[in-house]
Length: 72
Image (cartoon, rainbow, N blue to C red; front, side, top):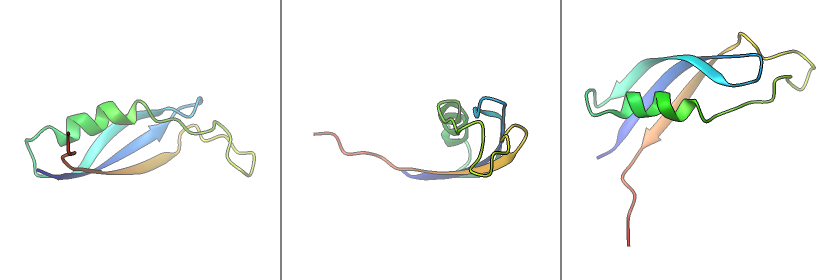
């Protein structure tokens, strides 16, 4: 089974993804949205962008495509 999720997240002063909300989840009810929220907590951006501007408070859309892996 595969899933596609988009989450809108806000960056904090350390570049962490916080306050994430699911805006798209297909298929619904299979846990892909909850898994994406947990995954987003592992992501981090530099706290200052290339122009020297802090990223705190910026909103980012995080697209995630889930698919079953093969185990051998």
